[in-house]
Image (cartoon, rainbow, N blue to C red):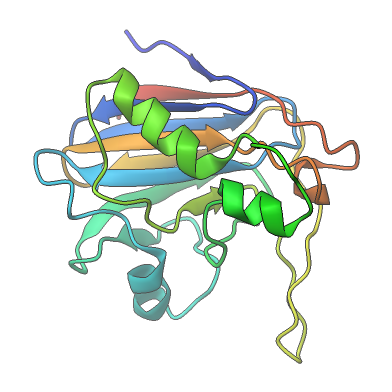
Length: 200
């Protein structure tokens, strides 16, 4: 029986997923970006790569039916369902303490890079690096001049995306703690999100 698990606000979680299972990521309160990573089980130097997914799909934003590819150019997950408006980011690296320093922070700030390592540590693993994540529900508009901006999420409470595992993998999440830019909504207040591992 599947069980809904919490990604605490500003924190990370990770889980093992078998090939053929589904990973349902829920934007519980409607305005939370969820950084998402996937690593091949038993060989974590192969991982979901946005740099390899974009040229294969020939799109910046993946859609329902699209596979997501590893750094070895193999499908690792496929988008099966998406009740959100389908706005997800593949361009931005995970935030880190240095990023918050550039935004003016003078003390340590919770960040997605450290959340990845903390979430993986909870299940006894250490990722080989912090790949650029699939930033679920993150709205990064761009214009014809190539200028990027920081948009608010377009999701509503309870919107979800369902991903099918194409190999045995470890999935990791961070409920992004960004509270300076508006990517987590007008209030800039990060909230919890949830995920569920399903038999499809």
